[in-house]
Length: 267
Image 1 (tube, rainbow, N blue to C red):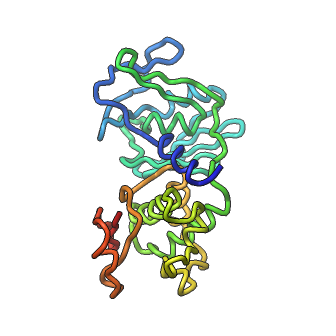
Image 2 (image 1 turned 90 degrees about the horizontal axis):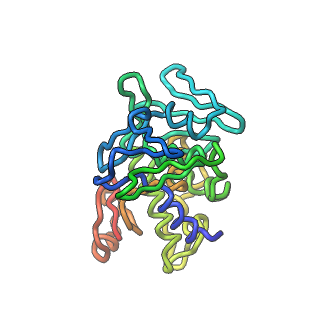
Image 3 (image 1 turned 90 degrees about the vertical axis):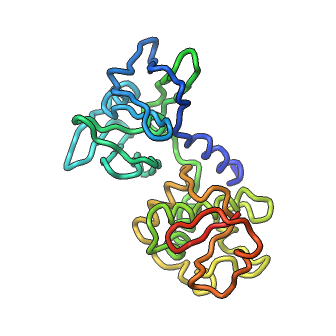
């Protein structure tokens, strides 16, 4: 699958919000588990649920444990972890983004239902009449749609461009790369975008060689998150650090989107 198609699919699959008008119904096999799952609508109408309660439905053969401040779900071909306060959960080597973070409330680990369903091979549907419907599946995640080459180069460009930036800034750099992959103006692979030279070298780390340096651990995490659907900085195709460059073409010719850390992002 070309990255343009994969990116579009990831953006759809990674949606974590449900309409505010959803009734307090979480239907699983005809039963309403809203109360049992401690379901609630929080920021931006994201539906959070108890990891334990929903994992017991989606992966009934797995064991849910709490170890050293982290919730674990372990089963056949399944290892999932979620740590309160972190903005992701990990499952079988993948990382899924949780913008508002994993939560711990009244002794329960809470995560967005769509992220958890994706991690455990289930599906979530919503309708005004039926509320949320949770559909069990395989009990484990599908293989990621990105390749090892995508991860290799994405982690390196993120690390080289935003080593000192917060996680959101790293996601924004990765978003620019994937926005270019989707755009007809640029190559249609991660590596192709990074090493694009049609209008000169596009990324400073390619020119100075730092793109080949070993990436930081957080940069690898950010690469996994963005390749699995996390996004920041909207539809940005460019970013610059104004204090580090005398080339202001982007500022003068593109539409400003946002500033994250030392980077300014433009469409």
